[in-house]
Image (cartoon, rainbow, N blue to C red; front, side):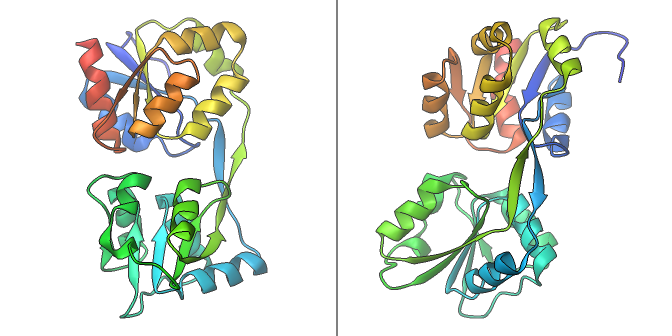
Length: 252
């Protein structure tokens, strides 16, 4: 889409293809324009092994969904009905909202919407001998699975979607080389940042590393610095409104 004049600044989003709209709305409210740079797309998994794994996971006493994509992919495979004695848990408000849209109720989520916040929930303490269903994607939320197993839970994992890599479009790379306004990165995924930095040409890696960035968690902020980002702040949470509000302070 062509625009008559440049924006005040750009928000660079590394979200999967088709999942930028909330970030776009947040950017617009702060006088920015979205620059989508997706390193992958979300692909639901539908096979017998995944259906069996999901049935086992959602039969556990505690069921943890790690993202809105996990909820949506699971709902394609089976009805998501909570039994009265179960605890259904989401990593954050967006995942809980997706759960509600899929017909769920009584979903718990932490005030601090990251892995550390989830692990602080009372319902995930005292897990010795308990079964816990983890509805996620391959390599998703590794800290959660390892920590919960360390607390004595039997983790029943269902990888209901996968991240399929996509090439960074040449047109987007050309735009990135010739931005007509300042830009900052909204970071919600270490894996997305790693892939983008590995796929960009060397001169664009250098450019991106100089841009201000905001991370959805302290762990991600520190990892971004390890990956060579020079200016990384932490947002109070992972919501697009939270990330963009922090970034906007740099461009006032």
